[in-house]
Amino acid sequence: MAVLKERGPRDRLWRLAAGQRGYFTAADALAAGYSYQAQRFHKQRGNWLQVDRGIYRFREYLDLPGEGTDHFVRWTLWSRGRAVVSHVSALAVHDLGGANPTEIHLTVPFGFRQKDASVVLHRADLADGEIEHHDGFRVTTPLRSVVETAATEGDQDVIDAAVTELLGRGASRRRLRDAAQEFGPRAGLAIERALHARAE
Image (tube, helix red, strand yellow):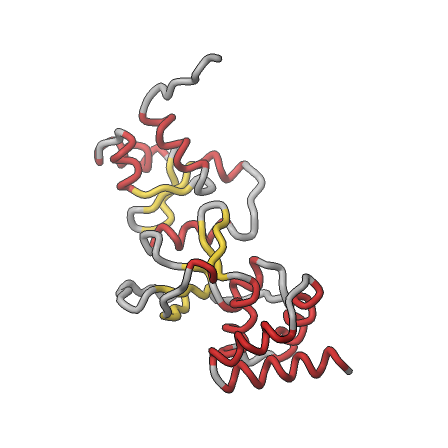
């Protein structure tokens, strides 16, 4: 069986970016074989679109069908892979509760120091079992997404709908209650209200 060989820096970078919805960093480009001078050339020619400091996207991806979650890859690269999409943003990823957040919510480790006005940062050390891997980014699991949103979100209607949909996907009331208890009284109350509303 013939093995396809990478022909040069573009092939190496394209292969990496293909798993990140067309996004890549300056460090990725350097590792693929593009000098900083070559990077400036491709940026100036419009071959690469600069979306943030040191973060680019292949121009061709503008012509491809996108997904509503593409921008989360950009924030993953911004955080150097440390951020996890969470809270109401994670509800939107999981299509729970009809969430349509205007802000991007990310959970980062306690020692994380970067800031950006475009994102809301939450700090926690997440266990592997609380994270799902998507194409180019990570997101909190549906159960954690609902409970962490209940601990911080003021829109009870979103929480009610998310709980109803999560139960419809096989989650148990007991697991919801147990998870909510770990987040404190606010989460517990919001989850209980949602469970009560569903029972009515």
